[in-house]
Image 1 (tube, rainbow, N blue to C red):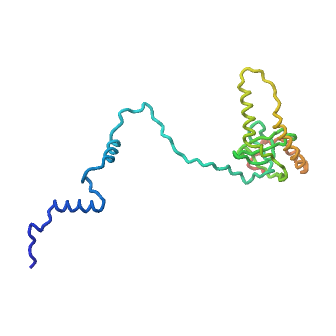
Image 2 (image 1 turned 90 degrees about the vertical axis):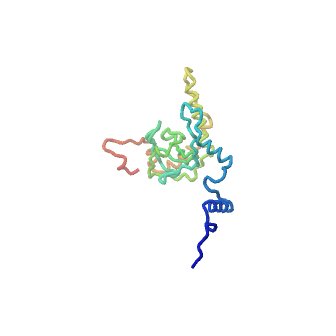
Image 3 (image 1 turned 90 degrees about the horizontal axis):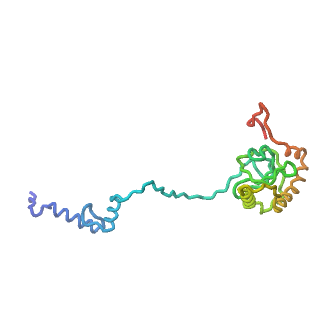
Length: 221
């Protein structure tokens, strides 16, 4: 028969607990509630649980961090250089213009030409135009690189400054020489191309309108 274990051979609770502590120290792990916590852990715990002494009278907005990435505006597939567009808003609403190129801001650079319908070089958003199926070949038209967003922003800034001058006498001022030169250069290249296509000059000079009973979604542009 196997010999009975003596009380000295029976592991006690104290010896079992001490063996666990020794094993945890060897493994690099600690038991919950065993030993002393580091000072940094104690300070962090106290800071997390201790309420602030003063509260802000108003809610302090927290900054929202957003990762903004500059994405170029995608040009609609129905719009290409030389496409005739119909303006839907602004001073020249209903006018037909020729699309020249897309600027860095995503806006479209268009021209009447000015000698045909009075629409000068302008920037328009593609959401405010209707692209027609009429198109002319402007591959040989040279558009100056200086016709960019900065060119038009300078003109807009000057116009707004004159508007807020107060009670000063309003006098009609002529356009800057560089604006006139840029318009003339573009028109001189567009006019031969417009006159080459039959009835295109009259088409550009006519304003787009809708009569009673005519719905735009049933039209083919």
